Image (cartoon, rainbow over all chains, first blue to last red; front, side, top):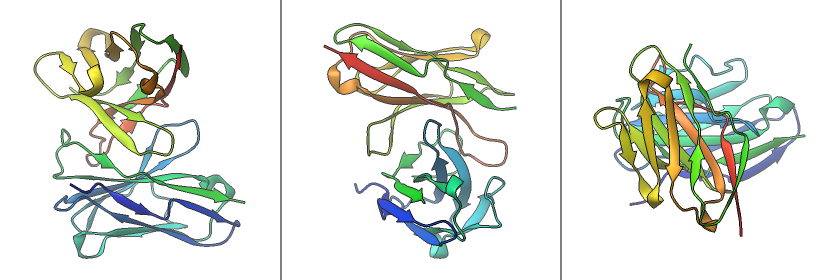
Length: 115
Length: 114
């Protein structure tokens, strides 16, 4: 079974530029999460989708971050404009359902460096 | 507030020695608890999870964890560490208040010495 796919794996941009990350969840997984992992910290949720609807985006900095999950499959996370503090690993995860006990499967992440 | 504390930032264990990684949580109800491992350049891999039943949970790679409600703890253990266990370990609690996302601790880096 293929895992969660993410691209690109690495990205370096200047501050105030824009960037986009792509995630393809495990086939059949209805729930998709984007987490931000800053160096030395644990992952923190940015946004949760259930199919193509948003369940929780309370911690998404909406003035610069946006995300969509068209057709309830792939998802894109965008940052515009980027700030230095956005340097982090962006992890995508998916789960079969939306129960708290459902295992979340993580992709390898996209490491973003903002200069 | 929901939170997870991993008191040890970095632990070094000799190969073949036993391991215990500590995790304390703050949660308003009975939580679902998870341990994930992250190797360099890799995503998070689930080691084990607890959501009900027997408080001693067995996971992959020879790991186990014990849920202690009275201590709000979910410590991870392994009787004999292998060099390949060197990685970063994250304890997580869920679901969060708004959805089913996980709340992670800051992680513990495990080094294994020969």
